[in-house]
Length: 314
Picture 1 (cartoon, rainbow, N blue to C red):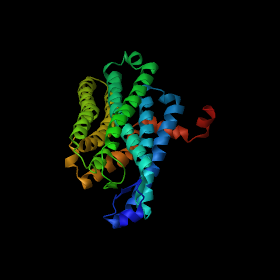
Picture 2: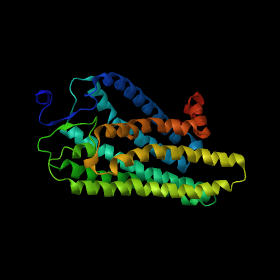
Picture 3: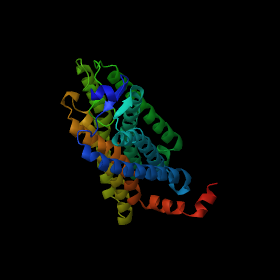
Picture 4: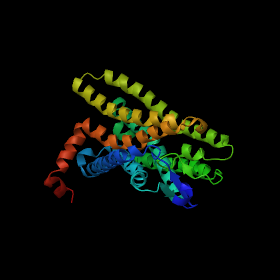
């Protein structure tokens, strides 16, 4: 009766943390603060990467793409979560759910490929320094970034369509705080083996393959770094790569635990925790990981706080 009174036929109910109401207010504050930090951090990275000439390099071009991804990533889910945490109705419209599903999955898929490209960029810079300007020229960087975004949105179109078309027999109560593939497939009233197989195959392609390439790339990078004679140059290379590896670990291992498994074995509580990591915590921490460990970005941010910086960029 509560479900019927609180939502129309066209709405999904996002249970979120309604089974633990005492957590809703603390989570509202935590998510709001995290979202504000994510906005400020990622917008700052995008601005200084685009406006500061000293950050005009392939590495920061891809970092700004990552920040744009994370900015959109959090915006696709967090505002709706905040509304549901504070409001009496834990609902989202059918169209809103489909849009959220598609955008969130598209951005996540794009980030999987982008992190692999960023690893290749570091490999070219450290292992092929003399050929780096040719290998990672501006045109190629733009093509790689464009291909990454197109691939991510194309993958989402396939997975989202198959998920949305799965019969649910009127079930609209989603035990999650946003619309995600595993949680929606749990509502299916028909056999979902085809969906599960498709999800695992695409999950392996977009998660395990890029992760394997990243790890293999860093084996070559580690060997190259050990051959660098200058301790300062060796530390700078290690510092840059450590930031990227930390981002990779935070994102990939939580996403793999969700998407490279049969949805039939999906655990609601575990799914919510993992989604918090790759959906909110990682996008919030990424700009701080890159700035706190990177002297160039910290220097660019300090320059951005001066009046002379904005006069020069006009």
